Length: 561
Ligand SMILES: [Zn+2]
Ligand SMILES: [Zn+2]
Image (tube, rainbow, N blue to C red):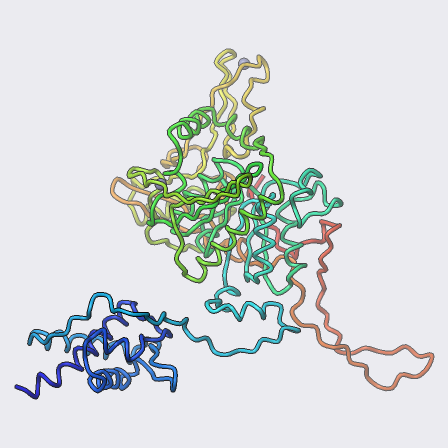
């Protein structure tokens, strides 16, 4: 009896420590409290503690570093089940009522845990542009180099965010914007030059990003975020950063991010004021929750005249300075960096910065229970189909194979079927997605009256236009199609678009050029002959000449015309 009890104390201490390692109180790579602190904490003798630590060392759960202390090992297939066993054994023994309550708050100074020890690397600061980041205790080069970040909007905020991402060496950047460069942008856009006026913002920003840091990979998409970017692209990002100037685009990014369960970082600026906020699906409020009643009403009013709503979005211009753009974009970029490293972020909170008073404050939004944005797609079926070659009939066939004959397809974008003049009683067939129909089309060409818009977003299978391709109806490449019957939804990705729609290969140079080898002796007055010269065509970054800018892949945004 004596024997068992005496043996149990180290066992219970080991169990406590093991369970704290398993629940993350002490994380792999971190140092345990000192032996002195542990002795106090458990009210035990040094020899008992040593025995407990030894048993944890035996299963490789902790390791001793001479003269420093005890460190938690990485958890693996081998030590994990053993750790659970130790926890379990200790629980059985504790029924024997041994006094072993750790004192609530040990008195005196306590040692703070040190950061996980990174392997000591002496970076070559002359050759390695990211070398200094290695000195940051939590910086993980691999995570940064493999990160995929989408930047939506290449205006004042977007320029600054992209600049920060390329300086930090974020490995893959996807830039989306539908706008072109105007001279007025130059006062707030470090990536643009006067000679580039009229060029696509997304393209120039991507080309310049690659020029500044050739080690990263970029891709651009000249198109509207609300309609031109397939959900499959969102799905393959780690973080989405919104650098937008209107509510409609933010709402679109918010919903897309929620549907495929990705965090996104929003920023907004006006004059000397700005705000930054992180939204993570399932963690607190989202952008839509943050809208006021008035804002919600505005949105629904604008949607009631759909063609005019789109027109207005394109007009929104807000006065800003490059300085407030730098401040807010810096915060956005840092939040993205934290998300990549799985560091805690305050999701559903907003950080306001007042540049007049230099005051900063953070408040939490309240999550709205029946918020329209709060739902996430289930399993996504990857189909080898493409948006520009798949017809509605083919898509319905796939959906009905899974969901039965009553399945319907739900498009994300309204499809304008026709414009009808109430005065002339004429009907003009349109059959185009709303993003392609301008407000100027809304008026009747003969009498000038505002025509009624007939539109739909549900495909039932009896439509006359089932032979049309998905792309021609506004479905972007690599999109995820929703279909449902009376009971459930299914989700189908047009994965056949993947190689063209997502590659991060814009403005790539050939990776390796063999050194030119001279063969034979060169005689005076005789031409030298070169062998082994690589036959790779070099695509130079030429920012003045847009035709030669991108390497072969042209993204088809609107599909067939
Ligand atoms: Zn919400
Ligand atoms: Zn008319």
